[in-house]
Image (cartoon, rainbow, N blue to C red; front, side):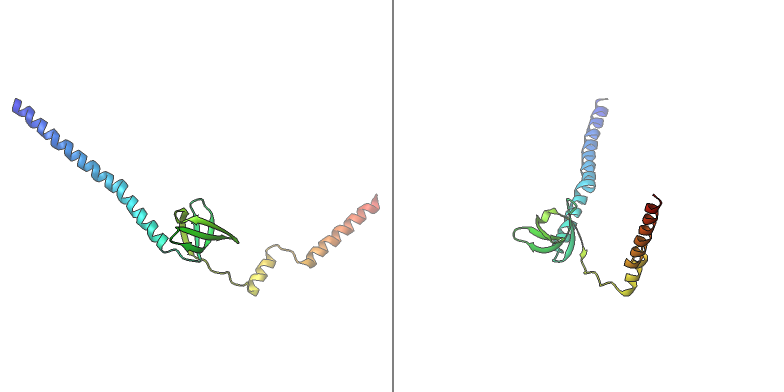
Length: 141
């Protein structure tokens, strides 16, 4: 009987060690490995940044990279004419290089006139008819 109890105790020690090893294996694949992949991806993104890239900071501020100082670990962003300096760690996402918008063509200007924006001739016509209606109402009084 004692031999049976000792055998069971020895088996449970081996089971405990096996459970700890499995727990560490799961922890590695569920926590440590994805974190390392994310760090590598972020490092790759930071290495690929350059002047003219559109970026978003971790605070949600959108801007275009004006200059990068690798030694001071800072980046200067152009945000619609305002230049702000951030730590490189503050960059949350790098979008593609910005391109300057093309000049509108004649087809695009036709579209804007059809989009509900009144021409000056139409606006004058409406103003004249409103003035006529107002003067007719004044005459009745």
